[in-house]
Length: 235
Image (cartoon, rainbow, N blue to C red; front, side):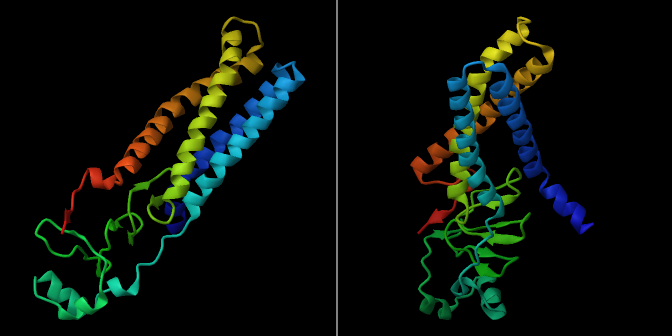
């Protein structure tokens, strides 16, 4: 049962890997190896495809497999401290910890995690899917089967950027052969791959490109995705 649930979690990752593997065959074997007659153009297309594939897949798998960081021990509460704070009672011992916290809840109190029994650091939130508090939590992304936060946001953003460039390249260079297929100038055995690849690239480009643009906007505002939905108070 646990194994089935774990495999289901990674299904989107396997889906992305499978789509890329098929696109490799369609682009390198069919387009570059069969349809393009000019050796120089074929070499440039093939080299660019491999380079962009590496640039977006490497950070993608880093975002998938990067483990969640541990919360520093100074944020962890004893049972007595947690009980006092949840009842709104003062806890003098916390002053000695010099916690670097500016974010509080709506009532001006420290933000507590009732599951992990900790004081939440700034921008830290509990993920019910991962079952842990995540530093600089952005969102839980099923496509990377992981939370996006302090530990892997850099890789996630790099993946969005290079995946956008990869999809633009694939869509732009396969569009001509998609049109040739529609006009009946190339065989259906090859053309169906070009049509499917161009269509899928455009569809994914709209979703990935939109997400990339949104995260550029968030970076410029120094915000996370969850901060646009849930506001905390700065004191």
